[in-house]
Image: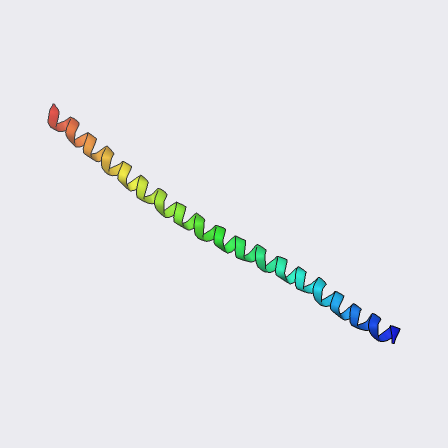
Length: 68
Protein backbone atom coordinates (compact mmCIF):
# COMPACT_ATOMS: atom_id res chain seq x y z
CA UNK A 1 0.00 0.00 0.00
CA UNK A 2 2.73 2.45 0.95
CA UNK A 3 4.77 1.59 -2.14
CA UNK A 4 1.76 2.25 -4.38
CA UNK A 5 1.14 5.62 -2.76
CA UNK A 6 4.80 6.58 -3.08
CA UNK A 7 4.78 5.54 -6.74
CA UNK A 8 1.68 7.59 -7.48
CA UNK A 9 3.05 10.63 -5.65
CA UNK A 10 6.34 10.26 -7.55
CA UNK A 11 4.54 10.20 -10.90
CA UNK A 12 2.35 13.18 -9.97
CA UNK A 13 5.41 15.08 -8.76
CA UNK A 14 7.32 14.39 -11.95
CA UNK A 15 4.35 15.47 -14.07
CA UNK A 16 4.07 18.72 -12.12
CA UNK A 17 7.82 19.32 -12.35
CA UNK A 18 8.11 18.75 -16.10
CA UNK A 19 4.82 20.55 -16.72
CA UNK A 20 6.13 23.64 -14.96
CA UNK A 21 9.42 23.45 -16.89
CA UNK A 22 7.65 23.16 -20.26
CA UNK A 23 5.15 25.85 -19.24
CA UNK A 24 7.97 28.23 -18.38
CA UNK A 25 9.70 27.55 -21.70
CA UNK A 26 6.40 28.14 -23.52
CA UNK A 27 5.91 31.49 -21.75
CA UNK A 28 9.43 32.64 -22.60
CA UNK A 29 9.00 31.73 -26.28
CA UNK A 30 5.62 33.47 -26.38
CA UNK A 31 7.12 36.59 -24.78
CA UNK A 32 10.00 36.65 -27.27
CA UNK A 33 7.62 36.33 -30.24
CA UNK A 34 5.48 39.18 -28.93
CA UNK A 35 8.57 41.32 -28.34
CA UNK A 36 9.80 40.60 -31.87
CA UNK A 37 6.45 41.62 -33.36
CA UNK A 38 6.46 44.83 -31.32
CA UNK A 39 9.98 45.64 -32.54
CA UNK A 40 8.85 45.16 -36.15
CA UNK A 41 5.99 47.61 -35.61
CA UNK A 42 8.32 50.17 -34.03
CA UNK A 43 10.79 49.88 -36.92
CA UNK A 44 7.95 50.37 -39.42
CA UNK A 45 6.84 53.54 -37.62
CA UNK A 46 10.42 54.83 -37.54
CA UNK A 47 10.71 54.25 -41.29
CA UNK A 48 7.55 56.30 -41.82
CA UNK A 49 8.92 59.11 -39.65
CA UNK A 50 12.22 59.11 -41.55
CA UNK A 51 10.39 59.36 -44.88
CA UNK A 52 8.29 62.27 -43.60
CA UNK A 53 11.39 64.08 -42.36
CA UNK A 54 13.12 63.59 -45.72
CA UNK A 55 10.07 65.00 -47.52
CA UNK A 56 10.00 67.96 -45.15
CA UNK A 57 13.70 68.60 -45.75
CA UNK A 58 13.18 68.52 -49.53
CA UNK A 59 10.26 70.94 -49.25
CA UNK A 60 12.36 73.30 -47.13
CA UNK A 61 15.14 73.21 -49.73
CA UNK A 62 12.64 73.99 -52.52
CA UNK A 63 11.17 76.89 -50.54
CA UNK A 64 14.63 78.35 -49.91
CA UNK A 65 15.53 78.11 -53.61
CA UNK A 66 12.23 79.72 -54.63
CA UNK A 67 12.69 82.59 -52.18
CA UNK A 68 16.08 83.66 -53.54
